[in-house]
Image (tube, rainbow, N blue to C red; front, top):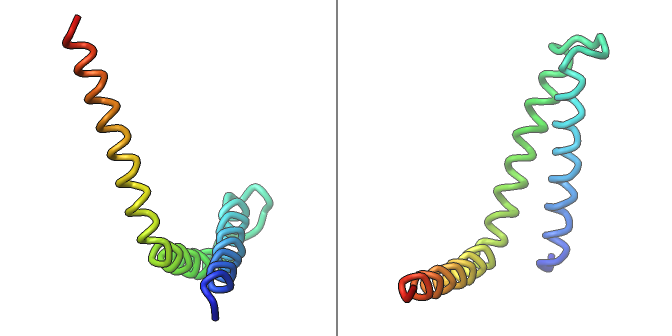
Amino acid sequence: MNKNKLNYFIDIGALISGTIVLATGILKLNIFRISPMALTPAHDWSGIIFAVFVLIHFMLHFKWIVATTKGYKSHFTSKIAKETVAGSSN
C-alpha cells in the first residue's frame, strides 16, 4: 500500500472513531435520557482506537513535524534576536 492510501485510511479511521467518541461523550451527558453506562464501552473503545490512529498518524508524519518545528524555531529565534538587537540600540 502506498503512503497516500495509508494516510487516507489512517485519517478516515481517526475521523470515524473521533466522531464516535464525540457523539457518545455528548450522549453520556445524560441530557437525552440515555443511560451513560450503556454508552461507556463504545465511548471507551472508540477512544482507544482514536488514540491508536493518532499515534500512527504522528509516527507517519514525524520527519515532517521535526523539520517544520526546526523551521519555526529558527524563524522565531532569528526574529527574537533581531528584536533584541534593535531594542538594545535605543
